Image (cartoon, rainbow over all chains, first blue to last red; front, side):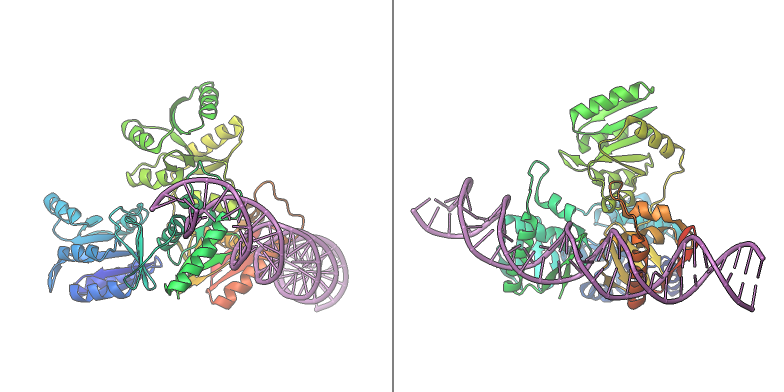
Length: 223
Length: 223
DNA sequence: TCCCCCGTAATGCTGCCGCAATCTTCGCGG
DNA sequence: CCGCGAAGATTGCGGCAGCATTACGGGGGA
């Protein structure tokens, strides 16, 4: 797991990085919003820890900036300002949780877990993988801004895989994503969709590949 | 004692309610997740019986929803899906037990008792050992962020061992984790899996070792 | 009517995994 | 310290389940 920590107090940042690493969490650290924004473009984080008072501005302004790019990475706001009104302010801007300083690392871990196991929010605007951008809400796909039209079932497979890129998606999960429980399939329909989808993605130069994990499921990776 | 039963097959639900009432258990019944969530807000249940395939979605999604509200009511998942991989998926989402259909009411009662006397489970999101991170929910394994693809049976062995790292895992426990009850093995198939898994972990530089405790079972340690 | 999505099934291939043979390690008793 | 038996480790083999691909045709929408 990889976190982005945006915090200007060096001592706190170092202590936190150390503590988190003991939980197997890799932490990228920066002190300025401008850098943070750049980092989120280059990397994919599982969550972001955000301080409010920062050298180059109010931390909260970062949230809409990020959300506008379509990222729904969970954000936990860390701050000394812990009045109820201010919590509301943060949460309304799209933060997922709010943690007043000082706090115990254990509490942070608990909130992290809670936030990460939360079902993906509906505010998720688009998924970006390889050279393609997927908009699950409008069910549209573009490769380098050029629209790519996909049949419905193939699109559903693609979305299900893209939402969990680099992670194995069970065969049964994919079936659940493509078929509702009334529909039945008694053949290799899913395999056929995968195969046709692969061909289309290749032709379109999407920059992603779909791997099979024998006996388990499928996995989408960037090339 | 009061249970919440979330099940869309009317016949099964009625039969179950009847059988449970003979044990002095009151059962609330609903067929939809949305209603179930509302009911848990209004009532306090001793345990929840949850079907997976429901008209308004996959039952498992209910678990994080509920856990997020801070409730630790034991959940037993009822389902026709009883493959080892799917058991892992269910339990790691925070279910307390898993019961494949069809089942005997007596077995359900036994599991209910077991679950009620058990201290609330703390499910880990991911397991970090050596240089590797195991995400049982997404069934993915990475070594220093590089995905490691493992065959199904070896993956199941690894997850079972990693969950109890530094502790001996009984041979029989491992077998139960890898094979369902219909399958039988009459050879050293498990040993073979361990051997091949060791080789793969070594090649990948996972930073862990699997030790044998003669006559008892196996044990996973960091190097 | 034409098009194309999509379920089905046939075909070929890959590699998982059960099995068993063989070798190694461990623990115990003398 | 040695020897023996049992448990474990390793590995090749072969069966076959699972996957990839593709052709075919029904059926629904434009």
